[in-house]
Structure formats: C-alpha cells, structure tokens
Image (cartoon, rainbow over all chains, first blue to last red; front, side):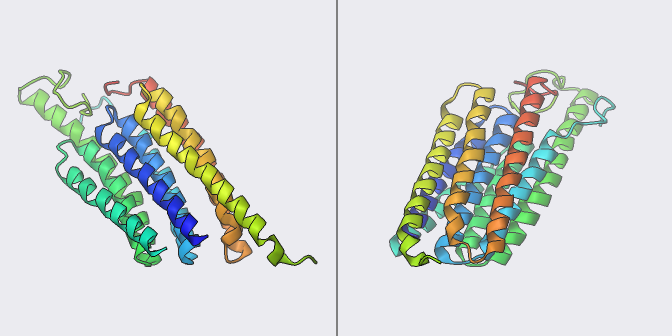
Length: 88
Length: 105
Length: 104
C-alpha cells in the first residue's frame, strides 16, 4: 500500500515538473501565477501522500501551510495598485 | 518501496536544480520572483523528504508565503521605477515594446 | 460491533481508486495547462485539477490519518482550497481581462 502512495506521489511530481515549464515560459504574468497555483496544489497532494506513506503526521500541517501561502501569493499578485498613475 | 523513494528523490533533484538555475539567470524581476516561489515549493518538498517537517513548515511559510508576497510587490515597484527612469533620462519611451513581455509600461 | 480488520481490503481498494482518480485529474490539468491555446481556457483546465484532483487525493488519504483531529484538518484543508481556488481563479481572470497595464 505504501508503494502505491509513493507511486502516486511520483506521478504528481511528474505533473509538477510539467507545470514548471509553464511557469518558465508562460507568456503573461497571469499564466505564470496560475501555473504556480497548480504547483502549490500538486505540492499539497504530494505532501499528503508522503505523510501517509512515511508515517509522519506533521507533514499534514506542512500541507496546510502550502494551502495558506497559495492564498497569500494570489492576493499579493492580484492586488490593485491604488497609487497607479501617480508616478513612482 | 526503496526504489520508488530513490526515483522520487532523483526526480525531485532533477526538477529543483534546473529550476534554481533558471531562477538565478532570469533577467526579468517578476518572472524571477514567480520562479522563486515555485523553487521554494520544491525545496519544502525536499525538506519533507528529509523527514524534517518543521524545517519544511518554516521554509513554506517564510520562503514562499511572506517572501514571495513581499518580493512580488518589490518587483512590481522596481519595474515601475525603471520605466519612470527611462521616461526621465531618455532612451526608449516606456510605452514602447522593449522585448520583455512582463515589463510594465 | 463488526470486526474492522475484515473491512481493510475494501478500504484499501477504495483508497487506491480515489487516489488514482485524483492523480488522473492532476495529469489532465497539467496537460491542459501546457497544451490549451489561451489564458482563459488554461485557467479552466487548472481549476478542475485544483478542486477535484486534490479533493479525491484527500479522500483517498483519509483512511490513513492517525486520529480524528487530522481527518477534520484534512477536510478543512480541502474546503479552504476550494474557496481559495475559486476566488483566486476569478481574480486572475478579471485582472487578465481588464489588462491592468500589461500586455495580453
């Protein structure tokens, strides 16, 4: 059963590596941001599977922090610039 | 189990090291910041794989969460300041296409 | 009180099924992210992977949690990802639609 969890984590890591290509080449910043969001989600999945396979429950908390920081990053990215137009 | 974990570690290294190189050599600030956020995620996975969940926790929270948000704001401000400099001291006007797609006019 | 050990193969099978489905959704989301032509269709592919894929993985890992508290924590994590994913995708799409001072 642990083998299966590690295998699934391996598959998710492969999709993460694919998403990295979109972060690197993505034509617009919005592309990069949403690819980074997908990376965060697959990172959460990997952490959950690792926590179950290796028997380290503290990794569930790390997954929780991953979810939190995805929110923070999207908020920082889509923040409207209030002082736009007033120069630097 | 062992071979699977070995494969996992190898793939993790094979993604993290090129990602670090691409991040460092990226010429454009916002692109570099987003790549850095992705890099921090894989780095936290490495800490988790090394059975150090507390370090992974700190890495994720400080590196990608706080650091990522602060550096996104800083990169945005830097792009705006350099565009204003160009407008002040000549060179190509900031609205012109300067080849980099993420530059803010 | 039924014997829980007789249920173990059933629970394991269910877990395998759910995690496989979740991994499939992640795979489909990444392929969509790489292959779809424009930003909004890529966003559409991405949200499927985020919400459904992660949800299925959470449900598949759920039988392996050490105690009930961690189970509740995992379910709350999924709900947070659902809410944050929907809101974030909406914000990114709106920002991209309005241009907001950057090339499209």
